[in-house]
Image (cartoon, rainbow over all chains, first blue to last red; front, side):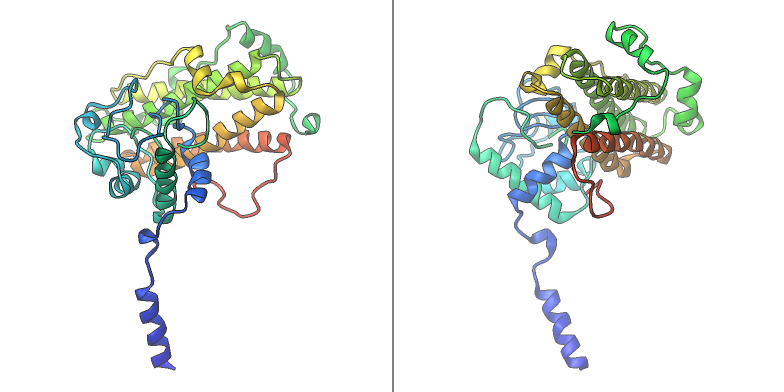
Length: 137
Length: 199
């Protein structure tokens, strides 16, 4: 029995960790609506900048949005890794930026990032309030 | 939508709505009220986290500015019927009180409160032209209230001054109360599972 338990433990250790899992854009869309919409939309600058096209974009590059100097100075390009760090703790990634929102759940971060990636790939569309939200990005 | 059964403003409130619609009688809190809510002793200027905390509060203020205008747009749209209209005005007043609390806290931290955008800018950003019915207005309000509650929950770990997390918690309670009323009026199901916010 102890050997069986050890095997189960070893299998559990080998299983993919939640943070490493590929995100689900469908879940991400729902999360974006609930967690990000207060400040963000895909196509409109609100409290935070518009998000469509964020994937692959340099930080601080949305026209018409008033970024913090710290974010404008950063040389960050948004991809899975940088967005994950940003959503985990934006102040740790770019000290002096203005977004205080943190998303502690790695699976939720992956899902939202997958949604943003999908919408970025979809390209620009007519201005809409279509879901989506976090802050300065 | 059984609004009359769920939405009922408190007695005496309706008389205040006319003043709101005419743009006078804006809700303001006295400096002492702000200090009482925010906890003036804890907000010492010069603390290393003051600038960061003020920036977070300014984002929250931007959110409240937008919420106030959203309710104003709804109230002026002619789409809201009594008693829903009166409650929408009451919720707008709550957000105006939030605004005053946040402005007081930001100033106490040495920051400059962010100014609201124009009504037209908010209307475009919120796609207000697409609102064609009372249900549309309430649906947008419910989305904003739920997301606002989640936003406040999401910024709590970032505050350097823990007293501000308590202020945020009190704001979350108001947003959640608003969402619950709106969701019930819309006939939406309540969350089956606990911890429905912040996740």
